[in-house]
Length: 341
Ligand code: PHE
Image (cartoon, rainbow, N blue to C red; front, side):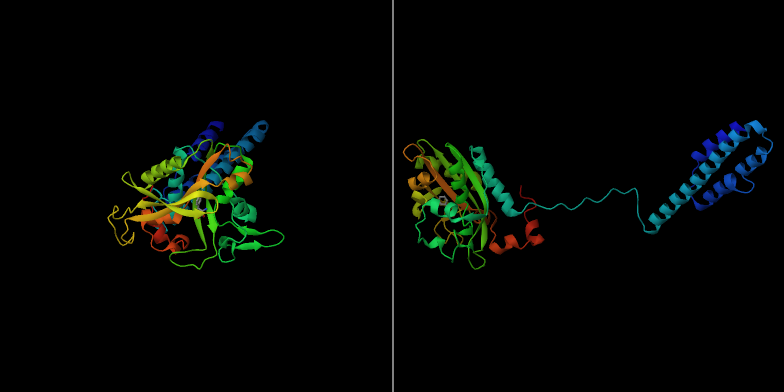
């Protein structure tokens, strides 16, 4: 009898039922009124009293096993039917999940940073909510400078000292100069805010990457060479640069840099207003007053700084005609950058 029970156990455990009829056959064969288990129950009566306990236990196990197997076979059948009803092909591979793409501004920001990183610059970041000192006063802005005016700056609090949204990431340069001894060689990427009416050409926030290099004997020629290298890497090896005198409170001398128009190659077209040049950034030698206010001795150290708008560079590279597209999250626009690196 033990052998019989064991062989039935093996049979039941490996039983399969491809359709409803097979499941029913399984039920009748093992659990039916005249099934294998019922037969064994009959035999059980003639088992000698001293073996009844053990045999009873084994029989019960067999019965439970058969009942569980039956339930499992029924379940498998139902799942299969459901899949079939829904026309699901369980053998088909899954469709890939749609992945997002990098935002064009992130792409270009990364490109800018990578170029400067290759020249030894490290990344520094700082808060978007700033105080007057880091955005203006430390950077040699006279008290009545128009950039401090309500028209340009979003003020959060005016008393006792001004708290505002930074209008440029030069504030990060101040923070690093205050806390780090030269040499300093950093780029400061980040979002900046200006109180302007939103249009195709202006927005109340945009993104910048600014750079700062402070060391002994840093010259304007060093600045020019670094910017030339940047322009060539960003816009192609034939790109030319031109520096025009300009004014920023925190640099002296100051300049604005143009690159040869990358659309017409400098011949003149609608994009460059037939000048052959397009402006891409501001730069200059850090004003000694700025170094002094950040605790750096201008008799020992000198340095240069530059700053550019990421939207502007993106516009030049990818011809985005309306600034508002960058913040509307229209997937049709964003997908156009799928193939960009
Ligand atoms: N901070 C300037 C701006 O916001 C850019 C700049 C940076 C100019 C460094 C010169 C030197 O426009």
